[in-house]
Image 1 (cartoon, rainbow, N blue to C red):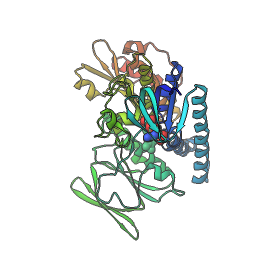
Image 2 (cartoon, protein in one colour; image 1 turned 30 degrees about the horizontal axis):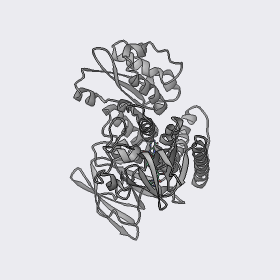
Image 3 (cartoon, rainbow, N blue to C red; image 1 turned 90 degrees about the horizontal axis):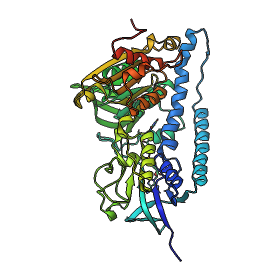
Length: 461
Ligand SMILES: Cc1cc2nc3c(=O)[nH]c(=O)nc-3n(C[C@H](O)[C@H](O)[C@H](O)COP(=O)(O)OP(=O)(O)OC[C@H]3O[C@@H](n4cnc5c(N)ncnc54)[C@H](O)[C@@H]3O)c2cc1C
């Protein structure tokens, strides 16, 4: 009997693996995807979708105060967490079916089981060795133990554990560098939990422009969320009344008692995937890939969380990387454009940053100009009380090429799409000022920020 030789085998049916498999099949490949758990991966089952759904609920609650300003009253407001989770789980089940259908429609074979690399062009799954010309590793990341004393204690949980709790904890300490912690903090707060968000960094979203960092912090603090920056957990003990945390903060010690500590720290467990069989390094928390999403071993590509550090764990990055890996595996020559990856959080206000910050642009040697337009001066921003929103553009002076667009406020994550296009198409400030955006929309502020960069705003004081 002749053995089937697949063109591509994808290890992992999540945000990166599914588009990779479909694209390889579209290019005429015989393709299999191996998944040992739910299709859709972290994003669909425990990440973007459930927490995105929770942020929608949080946004509705946040909009009630705007309704009140308009004379619309919804009191008493009631919150049924059980109903929220039921709707969420139904949506996820529906989406999982959709993914299975898409794989089937594209003739991608779905193999259920835990797979591992068994050599070049070989994957082992369910005791069988499958042959293939190319492998795409898309098995994501896993939870790493948080690095503070007491991290092993019962009550120290991650976002997966939170999703499995029938009732939300009353008092929670959140710690870590993940942007998703900020979303979780806001959701819990909007569902009446008392939250303390801590970070060892000087601010939340530490790598972004100062405007974004300070406006986001202020908005969250104004909502009643306690944020402790430059703060480390130095000890955690469990007592009858809860978890006692000792926090070191700017040479002071603060003590708090909480029901739960939510700590997010992710990295890729590279052992157990058979990487040693092909000479790939199993040390570290991710696999190095080049712009073609190729690893150092011919015929082996990687995408998503397995191929980048925690601050680059984004579903859209996994999915674009998967498509690029598939195209290259199928003989094309496609490169990943790293300039256009949006860093987002779906908090209220939303944050979306695309391209270079002022600091990074200067560090890269550009002669930088910047311009900004507050959403409080935008007509739709006024209608929706966007008091802390802002669009900020970073460009290079000589040709006016747009290098970065940074947005905070309602709709920022949707506007990020326009920012991605502008940077991908190497648009200049002049070109952006010629774009006629519909009125009244928040995206008009993109144009105004470009005009401000050029020193000729129309609608700013
Ligand atoms: C709380 C939270 C919220 C988030 N929200 C967002 C968001 O709003 N937007 C955003 O862009 N990103 C978000 N992310 C990040 C996003 O979920 C990930 O970046 C994305 O899922 C990575 O995709 P991936 O394909 O690399 O991995 P995954 O989606 O995790 O998929 C990997 C798949 O591989 C399978 N697998 C692993 N090992 C094997 C094996 N040996 N054999 C077979 N199958 C295997 C797993 O079961 C899994 O299904 C969030 C993350 C968290 C933690």
